[in-house]
Image (tube, rainbow, N blue to C red; front, side):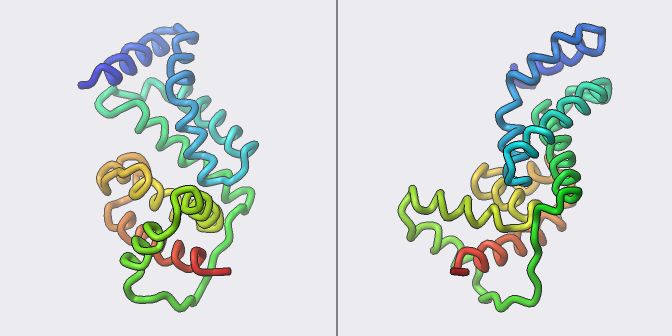
Length: 183
């Protein structure tokens, strides 16, 4: 168990035992990443703030269910993702696309496209493309490529099955290329 996980467990016990102020430890340490995750899904700062606030409220209410066997961050980010996706669905902030012509070698094209663009331009373009994608696809693509999480880690955070993650990654690559090449 890592030091961070030991601290997480300690502060979780403090909250469960009635020290409500101890929960500020979690807000201080995990608020920024929770916001980044929510923002990537919702693409709206105010909605992301709402989702993060809901996630922390839900985490506080369910802190007794945190056992300390996984990282607190993983547990919290799973709650954040669920709350953000619920809010996205409620707000209908995403669009879908159907029946597109997608090249067979999308993964190779994806990798080539990202490496050809200058660093600053690629960040802007990638973020612009991610904003146009379905939230779950953008999230899985971002966790896998930008956060360099393994399929197993993504499974733990999102609670999706490995097969679903692989399908989402495949679709996300196609979606990414579609929007990347769209003028």
